[in-house]
Image (tube, rainbow, N blue to C red):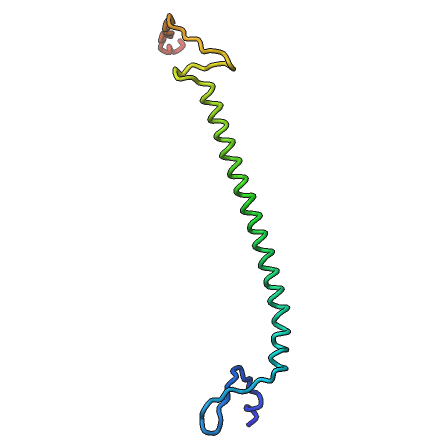
Length: 120
C-alpha cells in the first residue's frame, strides 16, 4: 500500500476497477500553465538555433571567400607565367618583343679525366 503513494504517473490514462484504461481529464488551468512554461523555452531554443545558424553561415562565407581568393591568386600567377613565356619557350621581358637567335653555336665543355694517383 505504501508503494501506491510513491508511484509517478507519466501517462494520462488510469486503469479502473474493470481493468479498462480511461483518459484522465486535465484541467484547463494545468494545460495553460504547461503552455505558459513551454513558450519561453521554445523561444530560447529558437534564438539559440538562429545564433548557431548565423555563426555557421558566417564561417561558411569566410571559407568561400578564402578559397575564392586562393583560386584567384593561383589563376593570376598562372596568367603572369604564361605571359612571361612565349610559344617558343624563350623568356620575354615586360612589353618587349622576344629575340630569336638563329645562329647560335653549341659549345661543349669537357673536363679531362685524371685518375687519382696515390702519393709516394
